[in-house]
Image (cartoon, rainbow, N blue to C red):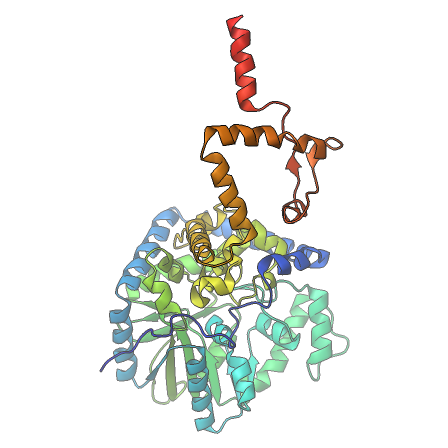
Length: 491
């Protein structure tokens, strides 16, 4: 058979959660004004960083594991068509059905049709970034199907009519008191004396979800990995909700990005060592669920795998940018990023926040649809040091910034930034102009005479001084200083 990949070059607009309503600087400014948000984020990321550092430090060959993960991912991306076709053959041979979805609209339609075919009007879900990416919950609701999140953090987000803000801990922006208020307000039958003690909150969620697990006929899951050589799917999690979704319902529908495939079980071994330490700071995941097709009398008797493109083929076509597809969604880069720690995930406007989101989201949507995200970084390099598969995120950010600049250069009307850079280029092109520019810079000493720095400039330069100061220009240029020094030496 012929496998069709690609065609839609980027994820479609108007569906899913890859594009924000406002640019990152605008959203970040609002987040920075929320002191409680910053306290929540700071506490959570510090805790996760500490746990991760402890368990990574126990592994003497950690760097070799990182390099192995990087090499496996690079090989898989280079042979992705072959790996996916092999995966399809193995899943089909074991009683499953494989569907190819070119974009979010097609994936949502496939899942909705599959649910309707069962006669069910609700589904239980185990956490899946792919289904959030395509807006599956909204599509199911529009089709008359209720989707119930079963991951505790996802449940908090859903009941709070909120959006996830972290890849691993979607409700990281909420504290215990806020979660208690959400449960009391939204969860039917909850004890009005519920406290904000974590165990009590977890027990309330468990009681709420148990009814859904025991009655749902259809489950929707994501997949952390898929092993091409046997058609085996893998979900790793910490709570056990995934195990319930993957075993109890009659029908299981898995939505998986095409980059999640790995060639062999030996390759999977590497990632099952890298992922838990990098994500939750654990030596291994408490629950690792593996399933292969359909087993008569055991687990779901109807299994469907939806392989999602939604812009991934376009990312794959970029020789430099394709390494963003190596991501195993561990969130280590978020937890070390000084920008994420201060702004949180909502400011990124995408289901993929933080450093990896700043490179992956623009590539999936087209850079100009998320043009501000590649600039949401200080380029400190902490994300590369933390990444378990060695994705060079700082280099990818610079690469995408260059793409954005090239696109803006094509516009008929140049931006103020482009005009300013062109003027600087003209001044610096000739020594005489540069000397004149140096002398003009001394006028800035008047603006900074009171505080010895420049805190306010007229528009459009005011955009710079609105959030940072400029140093007051020196009384002498370097050339003048050098001349006076040479004169003193000669005398």
